[in-house]
Length: 250
Image (cartoon, rainbow, N blue to C red; front, side, top):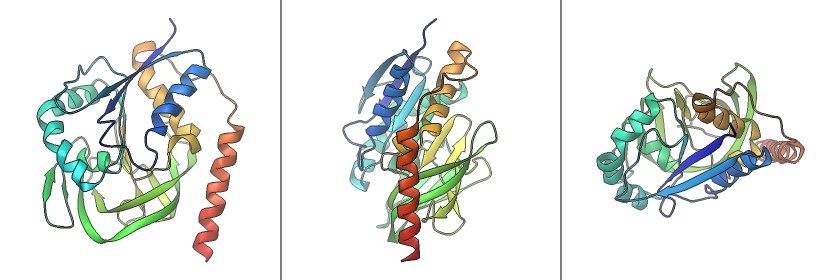
């Protein structure tokens, strides 16, 4: 059976800054290069989710205003279905504002509390300083391999992880979750959260493929993906690493 990757893009009009939509393009293209079909559905305010229909869910970042607008809808219309999808081993990628709202809560710099949907054992507190710049980190993949992760962060929230979520990576250059503990992002099951924009996946093809494999293996029993030629993607990643290290030296 030829795989079909069904992607649920949450709040595409409201939670999409710093090129986050490029992650959807990357996931879809890497499937099409393998001869597989892709279906992308934008799900926004007021709409509900069928938890077993989608294989991969994506939610990008937004300003505090957009987060406030989607917060109540996420909790009242979608949280139960999202938790069901997590337990059914669907895959999730949440970035910046999406990452924060999948945690327990986000207290903005002005003191407003936005309750999250508690997929991640994590919480966020707004700070005065913005963390801006390129990030280089080392991530541990599902098979235990260490891989380079690069991206661009721009956030004032400080996210802290509880024992129920593991960090996605350890920061080598940049700030990461909070500029204190050296962690970047988090993971619970097949759900991933990160502060990395940029877009994230074009420069990290290994992560794109890990998400695709996790998303499809429960329905199609895949154990590995057909390889692709990632020469250009890896050149872009190495260039990002060089720029980040030069910036740190300056």
